[in-house]
Length: 344
Length: 264
Image 1 (spheres, chains in turn brown, purple):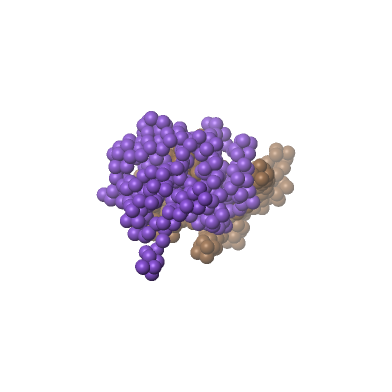
Image 2: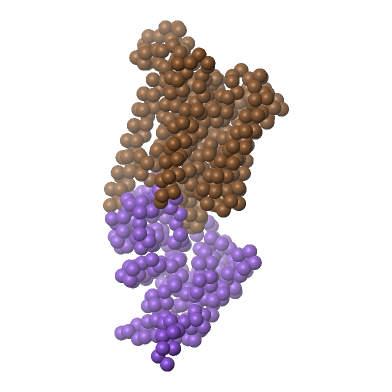
């Protein structure tokens, strides 16, 4: 019985991963062909494979490849950050955006920019600052949550307070600084891949890979599985609970901080990614859901980016931020989860 | 494994939960804590499980101070089952039981081995939960969950089994079955079990030694028939306890006080 159950799961894990990878590839091709100048998917694919490629097509594709990769990476990073914060708070409503971690990351970055605006060009430094802000935000939100009674809902309410405060602060600071930016400052507040350059990609890739490697080497997935069944259960299995939660929070902060520093605040992917993966897989085993969430997050981010660009086609006023789309898709999803959680 | 507590005390902030408790449990024996709510049963289990450290006194496992054990060694030797499982994120029975095998995995083993699964199969047959393995934890009845919790505790093949209220929420049949399984396990593997029980009826049938706790202190300790026939039990609980001989068993029955008044 146990063997059959586990074998079915492994097969399901494999098939779901395959499905997501196919979906992401298809979406990537669509993403490459959509924009102010449409390139037929077939032509884009041919150019990509190096079969036949004309110069203008190559140029346009270059930009689009960059932003497509950026949205894949950001989606993956936020979704993994989402699984981690959901795991350590054991709260299905947790997400870097809802817990205010993204907002504190941007607020700290904005304060740093107020002191020296050139920091935005120094990616390493701005990621480090955003990481610090994200981690402080996590501590702030969880502390208020504990003071408010330590329930799942008090954590979410405390996150909303922190998020609102620091989004406001970031908005004011970025508003003051707006003349010194190349891009509209709203892009940082609502997240956009339109300003991402090819040289920015490593600043997403490196934190993403480092985090995944750290998760594997520190055996965080199993530790989170044990923690799922309570602090005592985890510690009697030999896990250092405090160390596990702090390390996971730190990794989630790095993932959130890096994506905020490069593309700005994109909400709800960290909520939806893990939920979609758990719904499809049927359970919370972190060894599988971290991988599936990363894939689901990428698929979501890339779809939202496509939608943002489709809407932009009907306007001459510049690009719609990515975070707007994820909010419109994500917020009803949150409402659904709240209703489901409240009924139980 | 022989367990010994010497003058162990513990307090939560300033409230004394365990007060200078000394006791000894030999291998292959089932030792039970009984006592009213808040008498220190769970705290004592947590102390032995090394989840909390004594403020005073020493706990010995086979003569070795518990403090000197490595965290992974403890994880492999002791099993403590917490009956209060958080169930906010969806997880299935099999996922839960399999977490107990983690301490035995090789350094970078990602998934469980075939042996792990065979052990789970064996335990779930014993505890009659095979049909529940792919069910979600939040869909179980409290009796089913209790058996799952015990399966998870046994999945470590522990030398020391610490159970908190294993018979709670179970119907009469499973109450006996679960205790039978615990006894059988203890006898078969030469393990030691310490069990916190509310049900003095079950305690009188299954425990080799019973320690009656009141306000963090052991007020009576010995074979169940001795402890339950003493006046101390009636004083601690504030109810009458009658010992009845059924076949070769001495069974303790708590009786409400008003009955006594009606008879006289």
